[in-house]
View 1 (tube, one colour):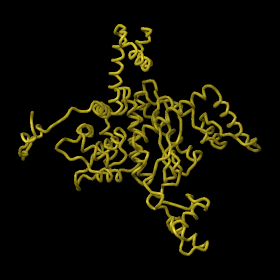
View 2 (view 1 turned 180 degrees about the vertical axis):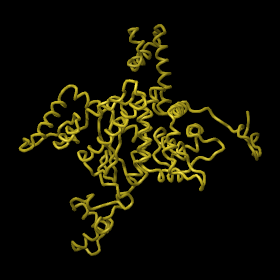
View 3 (view 1 turned 90 degrees about the vertical axis):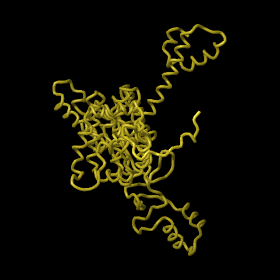
View 4 (view 1 turned 135 degrees about the vertical axis):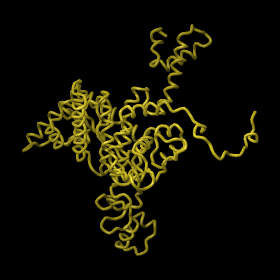
Length: 466
């Protein structure tokens, strides 16, 4: 047995590069790197980002390939901040191999990643997102015919207690003290201020209050019922494959009917570019993206209004928008076109095909939210301002789209999911062996319980009639 005393020795002054301790590359990241290299990812981003880099002065910069791979680590590892990505990258030999940093080289620190993000504009990040869509389309994982749209809230990097009045710049406590003085309380206590606050109506209004730390953040109600400063992220998802075709970021106080047109327009532009790209690169092959572009739009009842349905019809897109419960009869005087569009949408929603589209919308869009913001670690934003957040969001959701390809190659879209697959494989092998053995009376009760619990995953048991 070796002891710690025996292992004590003086550190070597020089170590050859070939003698550095190494580790086998992670199978998931190895396959992801093979995919990126086969599609020419590094050449693409270097060409797009060359205008942001100087060649004659300054210290060595962070290459575009390393920068965009570092941001993708946030999705695949479920890390929310750039500081956490830098720490994880410095700690993992597998991630060093993924981004292409040798063992004798230093990994980028958080400030380098943040500065690189600030220098590269949001349009270039959008081009990288579009590049991923092109890879999906070339592999038949994007159709662009049926699009589902929904939105969710992201918690802003700003506190409610820091908000100030838009007109005077006073914070909330100062505002309450002014109200107390106006009501006759010259020296109000904290209890007096709290009581005054409870009695005051419309305490939080985005027209009256703003955050000095993040002017783009808006007061909103989160999914768990808390009131917080937040942003609104809206996804346009291909209902045939589950790929996110477009993503937009707006103020959390904007209604769904106000933001639908912008997201639908972004999705339409993305599909049109893919059609042109496919015709240019593969003119002799059968088209994989719908040549007519977006033909059907599916959303929940929050997006329904007569004006919205009429506008969507003018775009030559069939809408499937469930209606809200109406109070009384609707009056259509002077709105014949809107009435016809609403009635046509109602018939489509009530049909069997429309109901199936609504179920698929709920499944695929909520799945993208869960993967990108819950397990992906971006429910709370660490950046401020819509442009900064959107840069991270485009690369983050682009990694989600790449995971659709990796599920076909590896059976898993993230390293954690790939690790769990091995446990499922071992369980299935164990159950198959149990089904193959002859019956044993001493093990029959436990064996029957295990088979009952795992019956949907074991087709051999069903064949044997066990």
